[in-house]
Length: 289
Figure 1: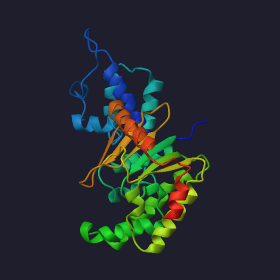
Figure 2: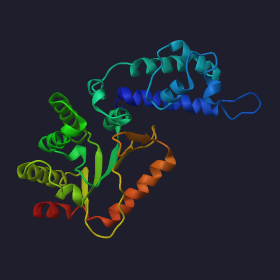
Figure 3: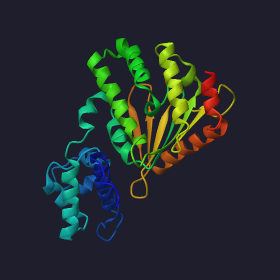
Figure 4: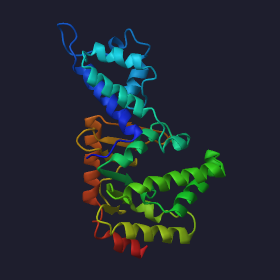
């Protein structure tokens, strides 16, 4: 039996199904589905609210609006309608991520909420060790360096580090996520915190690289394809589309499940993997550091 989805996954599943219904339902004799503006007629929803619902960022506050949409989309089977209502009700409950939402930039909570449901992940980080691979000391040192710039409190740093450690549980649970990471050489040479913190971080990376479900490659200082921005790709299995997350220079996070965008970043990852050291060579590189 498949594991029950988390709240983020439930909202995404609800939104995806509604978007497919809207785009595929007939519109008189013309066919072709409804626009969002047409779909919300007779409801208390705005186009922006329906967009957020379809993207998995929001659930229905008023079940009557959900019923009206389903009726407009031609869904009349009461069992099907009740399944949508139940999914909406479940997705409204709070989960472990709720207490951490204020710590993350826009767009990030939805991506983090889906990490536990991913079948596999790929990530590229050019200048810092990827979050799921960081030690607690390294994570704290990063936040401490940024404290004067971001004007953050010690409590916020504590909570941010706790969130990062919590996210790493996807690698140690019974059915772990398969993770492939490419780190730029700068991510390993740029000193964060003390020598002891860096030594501990190298040791953790060397240990993780021996795990069957974790693959770490280093993209060295040499000619070869590289991307300026860090990114991560989630493979959510057969029932939900893959999703890419890209960090911007402004501290915000952009996520997308558009096939064209996801495929573009998959090609970027594969190109850099071909230029990087092999996973077998990574431990030697780390030991030399």
